[in-house]
Image (tube, rainbow, N blue to C red; front, side):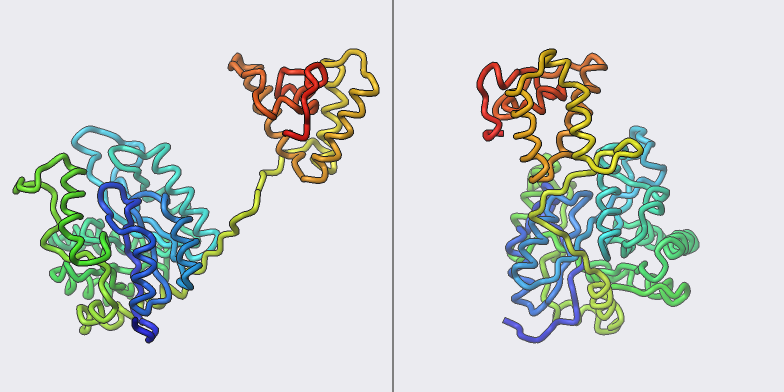
Length: 387
């Protein structure tokens, strides 16, 4: 165990939620972070946030600050372009949430990447990124990032133009990312950094925890690409050690660029997302003008519709309505009933088949009157308490 607080923080890390690419499990990442004396670590899975909540909870429990992020795929021609043999090309970009606004923007970006931008991978584009840039730290990406590819191809002016765009969008929250396994990019990235005043940051593109996990990771990549291990032209990362390196090793790699190590601490200090878990959160149903509460509107709808279900309103019907309304008011579920009746009745009015109700939901006279269910709980002596 290393009791010394590490200056270096891993900000580019893939777990097994980077499907068929990352090998590291969340528990292992958190455990190794603590063992190395690091008090924070990021999770940046490929194009998704599948592991974010598990990571958040387990890191918090271990006393580690969780930095929530994603390695996004940027579609160079726009996320709506999906032309064969043209739009398969995409660039990597590392995004980290600073605060609640950034976390929500990260969710919005990932959601859109799947629902609108998916083409082989979930993709975003620059206009979408600019729209959701608030609250995010942006790192330029690994060797598959746009700037790195341009620099590797000696296209320095184009790289500068791209870097200026990101700088204009993210300001002081944009960093040029540099990694140990791309030493050929060190000089051009440093030169670009000095010219534009963009800080550099050291990352390691972690895909597994221990160096000895490399063979297992190669097997995983072979499964992903439907290849054999002895295929010479298969996708492989075996010439790189992309394990969860100790901070001392990272500091050694960048002993000539200490500012790149220091930037990891600077970024970690910027990222302070707090997620409130364990509480039920319902959206508020939009109310008509002059209606002061969801509960009052719920009661109004019941009074308006009760005659459709019960042309003759008996004392038993009124007592059952009041009994249920007392429970609904006490538990704060008025918005829930309003939301469900809204989409159920919309579906019915648009020719979408809706079932009569099942299980404990059919025990509610409020649901029956609102049109959510089609079963009279009084006729069948059903218990609201089950619901």
